[in-house]
Image 1 (cartoon, one colour):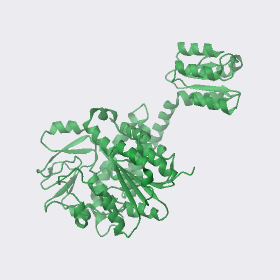
Image 2 (cartoon, helix red, strand yellow):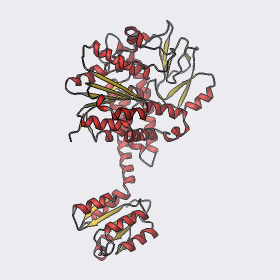
Image 3 (spheres, helix red, strand yellow):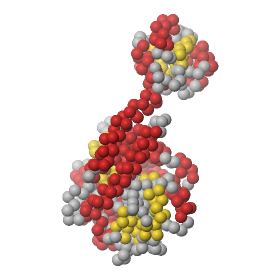
Image 4 (cartoon, helix red, strand yellow):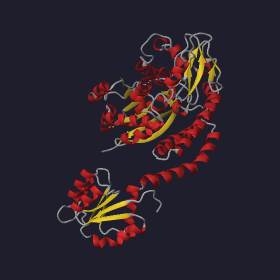
Length: 522
């Protein structure tokens, strides 16, 4: 047995002499076994010894196993306790499980059962680390080849799914070595993905656009509206939701809904709310919105609190343009008070064929992480960022809404308008006074930079973006770069480093989750 620390087992049973063969078996495997014949002695040994796991007989004279279990949990709430009993009575099992036992075994037990239980409860972290590391190592070379050979958006979807999966799995391990290797592989993937976007993106808006992926303007028409023919549908758009975040919140949501389709679509550039979300709800690219609905499009230099004041109207106009007469309700939820109000009055929305709920929590979190030290500390890593998102889903009004939608047999779509990426590498950019302030992309007349890694678009109309004047151009950061103007350069470099930003080109920003779910039948 390969263990850094010799594991100590406390076995409490009034017939301990009959278990000597089991004890000898475990000692031959390298375990240290201490014994007690009653609950009182067992509690004393637990208090005075360094115990890693307890085997506890349920049926003992004097203090019963269940009574001993409760006292032991008061002494040491962390140590795993395995209940062993001759009885298969359901109420005893339920009481034991309710007292948070680690496992439940029925006599007679064989040595291999005991061994498996010990490994599961004391060595699982080591075994999982070894197995996960081995699995990633076996996939590493093939994943690297896939990254170098990827030639279509579908190829990149498969790659991103794998990277997001391994990011979560390797983050759990005590040994962070493999996770550092994954970070380098993600960096390589994003550089190659940026090259793919440079070479392909403009072509998706040209005459020969047959190979373009599902883009923001086509999401509603192709994926959401067709469902309305058969069933009422709710769409929950979580601003800034990434695939890895979906992976950690999915088990919570899937208590009430089962996924019919888990896919990704391509968020348009710039990957910010003003452009990507307006394109999604309008069914139009930003240039087309500005031309067809100029009253609903606000340029970046317009003095306004928000460039997304007209989402509901843009969505209504898309329905009208397509000749669809479905009823619509729309709610933008910017705080928990507002969310609770919506959850408490959900019946007011259920009369509509399509219900749209926009949550700005994750986007707000990313900005708070930039500006608030406490949030910055809590979400100091990708793992922390995911953890806060998971906690929010569990405890916020959005879960109340999801439960009610499931009970009402409403179809559900969960998606986003774009993702975000943690930025680490500053790039100096020079622009005029009217240049935009976003760190991942800039719009302006005189944008100068010395980075070869910036995607520059001299003619915005070629990618269906509006321009303020004849010489307006756009530049986009790739991978984990962020653009800083020369004024107070060092201050802003340090202020924004390791914060989550969006607007540029990366798998995390452009690969937007699109999940279609059906309510679980009760």
